[in-house]
Each structure stands twice: as C-alpha cells, then as structure tokens.
Image (tube, rainbow, N blue to C red; front, side):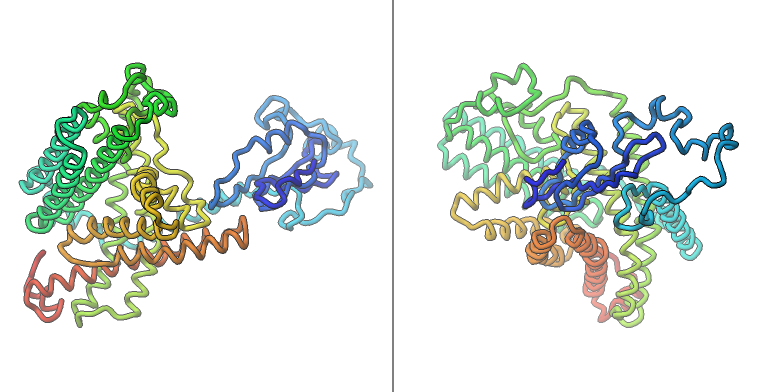
Length: 548
C-alpha cells in the first residue's frame, strides 16, 4: 500500500518491512516511525493495521512528528492468543518438550539480515533502554540532591528558622489590594449594566470601562511598590491584578461586540457544545448579571463568552485527589527551589561580597549548575498550575473546556511553544490583541511584535515590581524571541520533521534563557540593596545588614 498523495506534506507514518520479519506466531512486524516521508510498502495485506495507522492523530504544525514502535498484528499482545505457548516452527527454542526434535544440522542463518540497531532493521523496540534511562536519571539526580544536602545542609530548615512569616492574608496592604480588585469588578458590572439598559452612551461607557480597569491595575502596582515589602506577597497580588485586568478587558470587549455587532446570540451559542439547558436561550443583555461576571472572574479562562461548556456535576473525589496532588507538588517545588537553586545563588553572592561583582567564570559555573534544577522547577510549576490548579478550579465550577495547554514540549518552532504552552493567554492575545491589530491594517509580523511586546511588559511588571526594582530583562527576553521565531520556522520548513527547532527551543529556554534571567535579577536585587544602604559596594551593604 502506497500513500503518495502526501509526498509534498508531512506523513507521520513510515513502514519498511521485509518478507521474513515476523514474530513467533508468523505475524509480520512493522515499525511505525515519525520520519517526514510518505508511507512505504507495509508488507502483508494487513488492512486493519493500515486503517489503524491512518486513524492515528496527525501532528500539529510546528510540532515534532510522533515516533512509535510496535508490532502490527491485529490482536493485542495481552490477549489469550498471545499468552499461550507458541506453536510456530521455531517453538523448539522455548519449548523443552520438543528439544529432542531439534537437529544439530538445523540452519540457524536463513536470510540476509541487518543488525538490530541498524537503520534498516524492521522492528526496533527500545522500551527497555528507556526504562534504564529513567533509572539512571533518577539515581543521578538523587545523588546530586544528596551531595547538595551534604554540602549545604537542609536549606529549607534554615529558611524556616529565619523567622520568616507567610502571613500574607494578615498583611493589610495585600488585603487592601485584594479588596480593590473586587471593587473594580463591581464597577465593571455597574458600567456594563448601564450600557445594556441605555442609561449611558457607548463612548462614555467604554471610557469608564477603560478608566476603571486601568486605575485598578495602577492601584495594585502602587500597593506592591510602596507598601508590600514581601516579594512573595507582591508576586501573588500582581499575578491576580494582571489576571483580573485581562479578564475585565475581555468582558468589556466581548459585550461591546454582542451589543453592537447585531449577531444572533443563538448562532453564537450554536458553536458551543455541552451548554447548560438554562443558558441555551441566553442573549445580550440577559448575560449582564453579577453572578455571570463573577463566574467568569473565577473561571480558569481569560476570554469571556456568553456561555461556557459545562460538565454534568462536580466530582468530589477528583477535587480531593487534585488537592492532595497540589499539596505534594507544592512541597516538592519548594524543596527544589530551596535545596537546589538557592545554594547555587549563594556561590554568586560570595563573589558579590568580595568585590561587588561576579566574575565571568563564576557566572558561567552558576549558569550551568542552575540549568537542570531550574528546568525541574519550571516543569513542576507547569504541572502544578496549568494541570492541577486550573483543573481544580474547573472541577469546582463545572467548567467543561479543560484544554489549558497542549503538547508544547514537542514544539519545533518557538511560535508553536507560545501557542501551546498557555492556552488561556494565547486565546486572549489572539482575540483581543492580534486580530484587532490585523483589522486596523497591521501586518501579521507587526501584530506579532505587538503581542510579544505586551507579553514582555506584563512579564516585567509581575517580576520587577514585587522586588522593587526597575528592570528590563524579561522584556528583552520576550522581544529576543522574535528572531528565534523566524529562525526555527526556517529550520522547520527546510528540514521538516527534524528536531533542530525543538533542540533550539529547549536550549534557549532551559540552558541559557531562564538560568540567565535568574542570575541577572539576583544581581540587580543585590545592587539595589547596596544603593538603598548608601554603601558603595554590595559587600558594604551586607556588612551593614541592610534589608529590602
């Protein structure tokens, strides 16, 4: 069977079988490879297997093709047929009762075959080696953590003994910031209610919306900058303020479209599946209620719509399971940060104590040492927030669409990573930034630059303000990815299906980008401490016990 119609496009399947390749029951074995080439001859007339290959999911544009190794017999290996003793012509190799009939002159080399690890081998299964790799990875990392603890001690215990209080909720400026966010939500509802009833005009209403949303964001920034000394509390408040800002922008933007476009609400609802029956007849301004706004404000999404897909009920067993996993994962992430990242930053601090600057050799050493633990923390954070926390919110609110991320780890283009890594933010940027720019006449490249610039500004606000410093590393990092978008797109087009773009993605993010950002922000933070204490060097600042 030949599939030549995919000659100019990606086909995720490639088979190359020889007539004598078979398992113990005489079934031909076929590798399924993700190489970007058309499907070649499968061998036997195994129509069911061919249909199975065709039915497998196609990879998305900008992601790596799958690589799967398996046999192509129709029945499962776990079925009774494949658990019974083999009756093939080579059964004597494993059946003791027939060994007497196995003559010494039996030919052992019956055909020309390539070695198992050669490219032309018909059936390659490396599952055992993957298990070995997992064991080596586990042991090596356990050894690193053990060595780290023997060298630096149990750092988490030292931090807990440093009289650090995590009483975020009892912090008056933090609570004030939280209250102000709810005030902005109530003001948004009041303005939208007046617009829906015609009490105020369109221009005045949208002006009030913009003023309310942006003033709430500015107040949160002021509270963090002037009144919150704890970076942890500042990061939490700025994250919530940013999310609230994005949600309210989407709420006002979407309702403006419902109000002025003249579209039939039933046509919009027809695009949404699994809607509650009570919401099937919802139309603007019926959706302008305080309960509707607060449901959206708490829902794990940033883009407002008149109705959302819902699940039938809350599965409390899943809620408790998610809570348990959140607790375990949070503890593990805190352990990783305190035990594997802080000690390496201490090495850099020692150079700062000595002469107020970090040597290139020390920075390179710390950068490489931070690469692996930072990657672990990043992946654990992703699992904790995007999978566990957002699924918990969705389960409690019966929010149906839980595609909060896709297979970003297979990205062969940087742009694909940003489209797959954070689906709520991606949807918001596409609907409220990218396409509005396109409708205003901007080119796709200019719209992309604007999207990255806005993302860079908010990354900088969330990171810099809680540490009370004006920096620009996150913004530079975001804008620096624009050339990487073009570079990885070129490689993906030039070498379709290759891992070049994916390797560039992992290296720039995990080996260079994020560890370098941690170092640069740490240096900026120490410099700020020296300036606030009036010391000429950071060493003098530390000697005077200045604190931020």
